[in-house]
Image 1 (cartoon, rainbow, N blue to C red):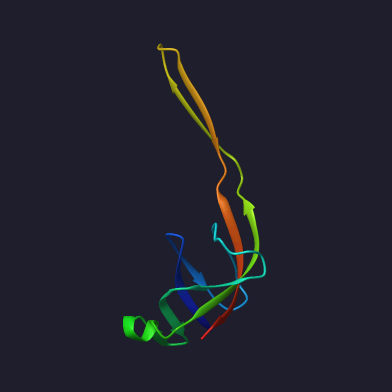
Image 2 (cartoon, helix red, strand yellow):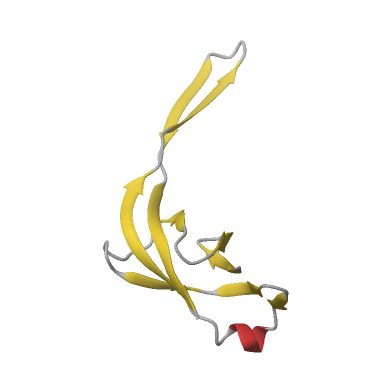
Length: 102
């Protein structure tokens, strides 16, 4: 089984060919392709982590859709002072499908 650890939007994801991965928003339209930088490649028993060898490895992914995540409600409250604050947040996300690890 071949898989790679890639850096995507400040996170590290374990991906193999055919996987769907949710990343932070990528400024590419649906149907476009992106390359993700590999940090580690595992091919059966062989593990590649040397920087000069990883520069040759290309992890290609196709953008499936861009969407917004679920709403997170942030509430702050301080007792006996009358302080209340309510805030919402929805992160911008992109769903990609890994096409190849070459």
